[in-house]
Image (cartoon, rainbow, N blue to C red):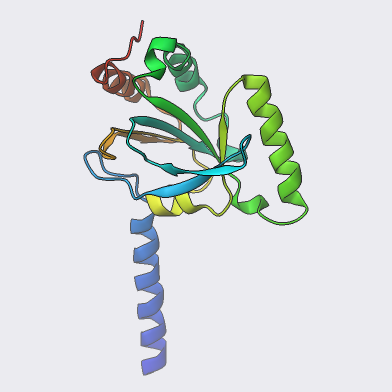
Length: 180
């Protein structure tokens, strides 16, 4: 086999290995790399994580239906005023594929409408920075809970099982949240 062919195969294999390791959920107990997202309504950037516990729901348009059950359970927790002092819920839209003119202005308008309709703050990841830095697979719904120290307390990808939802709720209880 010619040297060039072997070198080419080695590069492809090495790249495939890097891609496989890049798409791994953050490890519980590990620190999340700091990234910035855009606040859709305010038009300002904000860091994730920060010095406050944060539950991040990250998804693109293809993943919106993955976690309906988790949304039902978590909505009852995130809607409680007393829990808002314990942690912040951050919904981040992976809009990397829409980061071009004129699509971006239409996506931004849609995100603002959704935020207003749902009475929530939405954040946009225009460059896929969160997905890349935190190792998320594209087109998957992801939930990550980080403590005030920036360390992962829970990470789940795709449609969460009842066991995973229970584990996430337990972590929120450990932060002092009311969950009933």
